[in-house]
Length: 189
Image 1 (cartoon, helix red, strand yellow):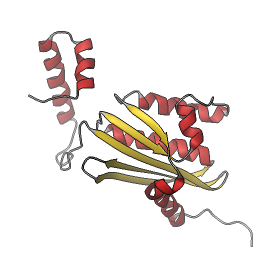
Image 2 (image 1 turned 120 degrees about the vertical axis):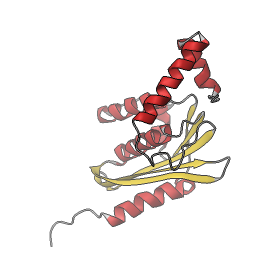
Image 3 (image 1 turned 45 degrees about the vertical axis):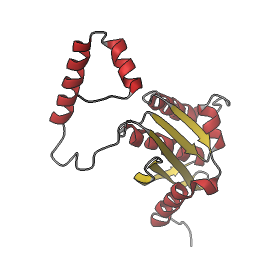
């Protein structure tokens, strides 16, 4: 039978004390997931368990200005890149771009079901707000904080770590590449 991560087993046991009910729930869930996917969806199986590293970055040229987000998800035990993602998000502030990058990265990481997710973010403000060291004073950021915290609850173990920008070079390069490929419109002259 399938071996589930310990944290997930504990949560299932709390919901379904009887083994038979737990097994039935898992079988129904797997059957439902298989019924809702097309052939080829599982050509590249997603990781289950383990520790994953998520690197995110958001930036804007001007503040606010043309903004982009990027995420890099790695499996440090295998030393492999699992996913990269970058997107131009329009005119936003740096802080909004940083939060949107983290939120997109958390959604991306959910698909891999890590037992532990370490989020490396080069925005000290974001890390301190999510870790509860700083209050969220800017009203427009509260929705992003709430969404990030809600997504964070889906991971058995998650940490937010501040890293220097130079240690976040891959995500930073993806942001700059996205912005270079979609420059802000110029007005005048």
